[in-house]
Image (cartoon, rainbow, N blue to C red; front, side, top):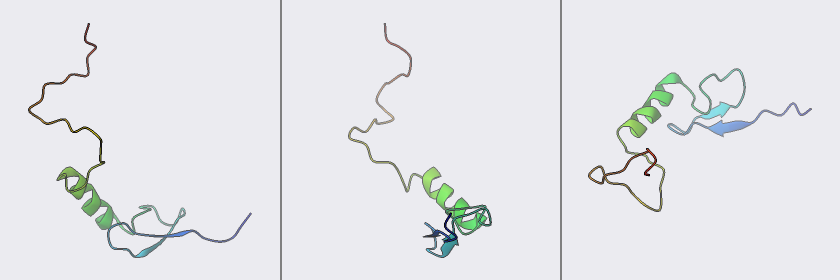
Length: 66
């Protein structure tokens, strides 16, 4: 097995992070960077693009329509 360590950049601050057990917040370098990223998702600054957007005003349901 390789002894090479995989190193990634923290998505928030770009600091190098070792991808392993010694980095509990991976891919983030710290809890702080992890929470900053979570806040960006919660504030809808980040989103996963889709081909169709559903507006809050549109009526939709997850229930089966029969």
